[in-house]
Image (cartoon, rainbow, N blue to C red; front, side):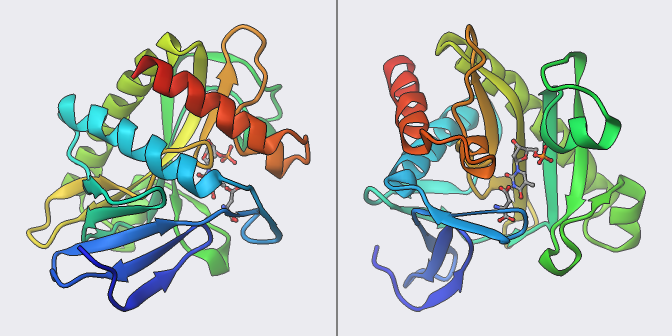
Length: 237
Ligand code: TMP
Ligand code: ASP
């Protein structure tokens, strides 16, 4: 399958049409942004790592009963996916306090919750992706109640699978962001990516950060963290 016209260029990926109306090619870039695009940079080799990691994790999730957009990895940076209409919600699951949760509620990072939490942000760059509840999402016709129930069910299932898997790798999944899409028949599937850009991943023993927070917070060692976490994953998959 070959790339045709470029449909879209996002912060970290480009999307191309193919000769099949139902299929697209996603191409992962090394570009990194944070704080709604205010901070810009490059993480050398990130595109290759995120492409492979996301595909390996989605393959596992498919086996566990979570439908995804993944069709086939085409090359280091390119993957064939099913065309979806993205539901404009960022679905965030948290197992441990960190990031905007810690800031918003004035708590330290690292508090282990008794049960995972879920929240939604309205995917809208102009508004800065504001937090939104499910009633608001339905009122704005971003999704139906039925779709929101399906999305919640899949998101918690993804959490159970990712927690167990990363645990085998000596990595704790603190929180992560998912995006879902609708196929042409309105079936909901997991889309976008699962990578150190979209997850907080801490070394289980030392709590060292092995994710994009190193870039967001100017901590250095960004490339090495992506390489390390990918190495742990490939050793255990
Ligand atoms: P937060 O604590 O900043 O709200 O982030 C929660 C999780 O979502 C974290 O794992 C990083 C991820 N995330 C994204 O993938 N994209 C984003 O735009 C933001 C803000 C967070
Ligand atoms: N990628 C997002 C942005 O540039 C934010 C983030 O991941 O922190 O806005």
